[in-house]
Image (tube, rainbow, N blue to C red; front, side, top):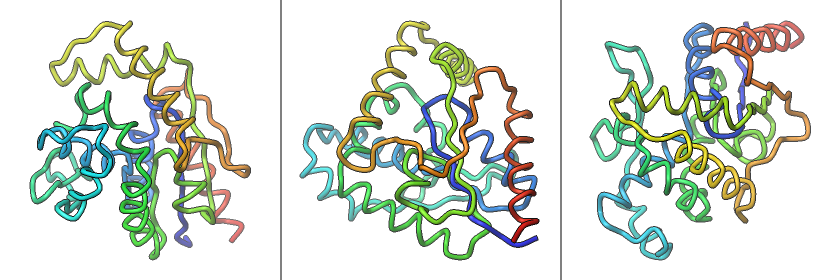
Length: 227
């Protein structure tokens, strides 16, 4: 089977990363969670008490940040490494979620990460999810998918995710966070969240993760058979 690039974009909490990770595992592709990269930089900013409003200071500190991924031997998941430390758990908290869209809007931060992401895709056989993968990172990807879901469905998933980590937040707080992120992601000047013209839309509101995975794999099989 010929290796291709699969780009998945969409709103927060619609199942992009989980679906992409499972698809990658099933078809033996490299999975890259681009959102984890932005979250890791956000975590670095918060840990070092840099003001999230001080973009100049944040840009200056980028040279101190090294990011990579490693496979967790127990879960077989690709996890983010920030300056030599696995921070996969830390980047998923609400504090990072509340600030990541602001950090992601900084042009220099996006340029810093897009360059790394594009290097990863040169060998093909990669599936990456995020906000601007099909429009900026891989505009020539063989498959582009745009995932969305109702705010209620996304909030329920995020609550369950946080619950599994031992964290508890009200539905109201989660919906507020998602709405704020949607607004910031879609209206930012640099690489706003939007559907690529040739992207296939998948509404995951009523779909299980397995159904999402099956839909994506079906698209991959159809595409690779035609190449």
